Length: 203
Image (cartoon, rainbow, N blue to C red; front, side):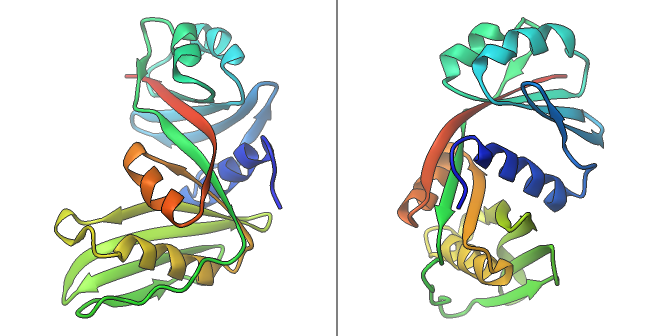
């Protein structure tokens, strides 16, 4: 079982495995991941808004991202004008096995991978309909890049993807970072919100 701010660490380590980045580096205020992509050079994951002001002043180079656990007003108060905030996200957790979900007629499901990363692809004929991936780090499943194509939404495909990923991962503790839109789906599946997460970046 994962509790409290251990959930941030679980998500950070699983996200790094999912995205094949360098391993996270522990920092006094959270974690750093050297992502190494254009526009996304490095990412800092901060445990509290109290750490934002110092980081915002000292790491404001192009391609730097902050993701901070805490309320949006508190996080925004610590940012300098160099930073562009994004929409609030939600760190969520789930314990136990996810209930099985039937695949709607006319759709097929493919599970790819043999660990520690698996991908689920849902198709309608030859056309992609939904996808997602999961990575397991230290026994915790971290769900990532859960997507349903607009023309295939509201047909339960997100639930199908989540269940098949959970079966592939075989973990009893799971975490993810949800958008505002995704929070409703995951809440309906029994996930709980552990913290708001406010992103910001320097272009």
